[in-house]
Image (cartoon, rainbow, N blue to C red; front, top):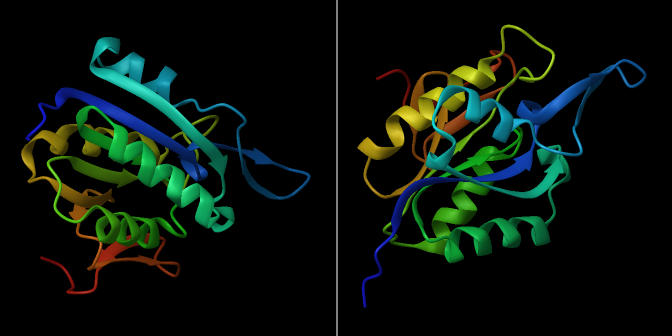
Length: 175
């Protein structure tokens, strides 16, 4: 039986730099306790277009197998056709591959996005651009799992994060 999925965008929030603040005592960014994504998204589009769910607020290097299972469960039970997962960039490709392997063929379009610079307290931040990219393309790509970063959409199999370049790219090079 094929279910009818709702056309809103379901945000699954997991933390990462996009939802962090600079902590001078640690000389690094740390995830906030509560996401700023809902507040930000409500400023750029009609609030009734989005549904928000906060799974955790962690640096992606600290995500556990249990956290990944919670992300998977949230995607599986979601009633929505379009899902954007905000995620830390360090392990974003790994979680995207995990989801794709566990979900198999799906009717849903799932996009991972995040940032190298927090959106709270920093300007400019690539996070706002990446959120806009994800929202702008999600309705136009085929169902499946993708990563939307740096103005491009990647499949989980091809995407890699370049620490040296501070950006995401394809193992296949520029296209």
